[in-house]
Image (cartoon, rainbow, N blue to C red; front, side, top):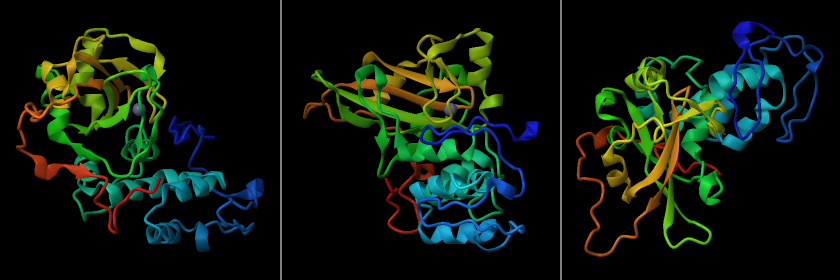
Amino acid sequence: MSEGARNTRRFFGASSSGAGESGTGSAGYRDGGGGIVVSRSSDVNTGIQDENVLALVFRSINFDPKAVCTVACVSRRLRAVAERVLWRELCISRAPRMVASLTGVPVGGPPPPGRIVGGWPALAKLLLFCCGAASASVPGHSTGVSRFSKTSGRSFLARRCRGDLLYVSDPCEHAAPGADDDVGAYRGVFRGFMRSRTRACLVGRQAALEARVRCPYCGARVWSMVAAGMVPRIAWRRLGAYEGRLEYYVCVSGHLHGNCWLARLTSSDGEHGGGDSEDDDDDASTESGSDDGRAAS
Ligand SMILES: [Zn+2]
């Protein structure tokens, strides 16, 4: 297995150790559970194993995430195709403008690269899966429709890091067991995190990586932005959360996940969010698929 093929990407907890090798060889013949049967043919680029054919088949089912998971389990080769093509196409189908912004490849342009920091499976999971809040015993779950916004993202950046581009979802609200208030869980992703000011700040402050928390999307280690002292006051105002009662983490690949305690709104104070809607037209929504857009659970 080549060094270049290593990755740490995961989806739904499945670990992956290698990608990119050619040939199914004796890896063989197996019913993938979804009725997909891989032939023993020595030519791996024919029929359903041709990645262009696969992409067309999956487009016809709107890149159903369970089907992509299934095909990725059939063989190493199909796993590689899923990681490089199918998850990417799923992301584009759900959030075309957000993917364009993250990759720098315009909507309708050439295909974005086969690799993205953290991996396409992790980005797909981020689009489709609310991570819940382990600290409040709120489990994660698949989401129907989520809205991601750069405007929201800016509220989570320390003042000196406002030049970074960060997408953050609206908080997904949950009733917490045994609590009067609700828990909001949110998630997001940086563009070009390796070169971001946020990362430079974290490294410059020698912020420690968390010992017990991992990124629920790619499995990488995370920094706590609260521990690093990099949470701006506008973050909890944006969320409508109680002052100081929020936490979020950023992983070394640039995925963000966090939660907050949400103040119950009364009829007289319904306008949280600060009214800054300067670039809402750039929002990416997982709603923007080609059909009814509802992400399959
Ligand atoms: Zn991550």
